[in-house]
Length: 251
Image (cartoon, rainbow, N blue to C red; front, side):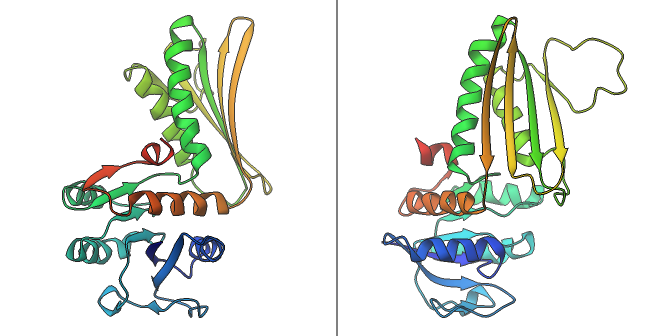
């Protein structure tokens, strides 16, 4: 059984993971870290890392950038692998993750969904085959009206994965309203839609002459990110020091 230390355990994703772990006999939350709220009684919750008395195989982080440094101090001191799901890390913190991967196993992903990470692999391969044949590439992402950032981090990750398959030869276009010209050959168009309670949707379009290939992912609930984080924790437990990604998890 994999035992995890869950940071941000009383947040929305922390509660999702807590519920998922109750249904999974192969994983257990040994303890949680959070600055607010009370434990639900299934595991102890601490306000800081030095208070933690329980042993854990992996840290799963769904907290905030301000918790990052004490978490990494604790992980390095105890030699515990870390699954980092927190967004908004500074460049210095990202650099520290890279340095830490020389000593412990580290996995960081912009999106923990297993489906999205499979999609990242699929669009890279599709781009390698279709772009040389003249297919144009567009990404359309749709989200609810409360989402603040646009385009989404996942849309950018999809564009990066496509461009990786094309040796970085393509530019990104976010707005064509100020351009009176036809579409450029080597560009990836990225569009964002915001409205109502639209579930997170990412669509990658490969448009050729007389044929269209579309790859699409829809996220109907937060549980998909929790399931991905749990899969990553199981994968990372006992692994050698290295920087891993979700592509390693899905194989």
